Length: 98
Image (spheres, rainbow, N blue to C red):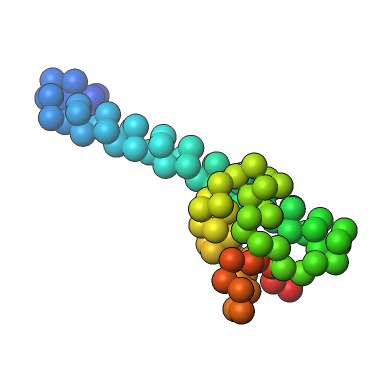
């Protein structure tokens, strides 16, 4: 381990690559945390909307309005969430899977 640290500290290219890897890893962790948090907010809204109003599908615009997220972020997160699916007839509306 000591030899690796000496190599990184004495080699400009290696130290640059190590720094970039650390910054990239931290950025990825922050993005994953934000995505998980915002997906949970969307899921909770859809669950409460379904039980509170009886509407099974909610539009991207309605979800964005209630969660204070952009429409493109809502669409992106909903399309990748395993428990949320898109309406086949109206492409900009979403529901929870059973």
